[in-house]
Image (cartoon, rainbow, N blue to C red; front, side, top):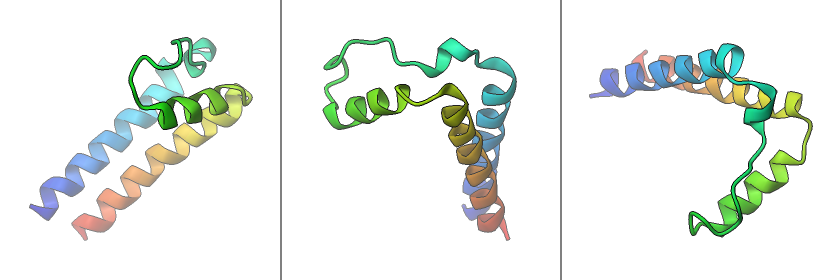
Length: 78
């Protein structure tokens, strides 16, 4: 079971890295939905706060999250 979770985390991390490096454009890093759509006001507030940051910082955070998933998956497998 640990191996499966590790492989899943590595796969998800690679998907995040690939998307953030090659697929996402500058406009994709901005949140364009109105507040209150999902019902999770805390998350929407956080996304609104992050969307006011420069897009390069948000892209760097996304890449860091992808590397974190790959690292955690590798650690779980070992």
